[in-house]
Length: 129
Image (cartoon, rainbow, N blue to C red):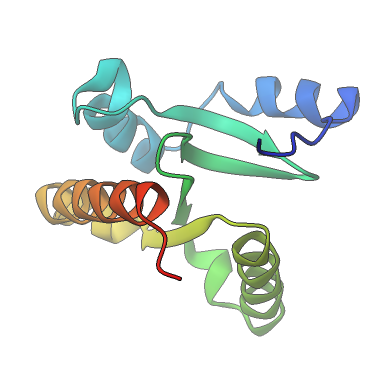
């Protein structure tokens, strides 16, 4: 059975507050992900441990991050890398897209998300020894 981490109430409240207002890229992607449009359930601004994830698919343990211009700065890149490494060590897969990816190529982003979700679900159901 999977260990569930208790989310600190402050983190949970902050995640709720981040749901509105969304960035334009988040609005665009959420339109594609919500209501099982891609066959799987996604959540937005979902807390995991002490992080808040832009979009999360529990069935695939898939985390989707949408990065704006600030993520190009050296310190932010280092933070993002450490965060990704940590989340992947506890069993999640993190994929990242830029605001421009979502804005100018939403179909490729959606295709990549669906492919990764399906790949992860297969991996989780049939882990290699």
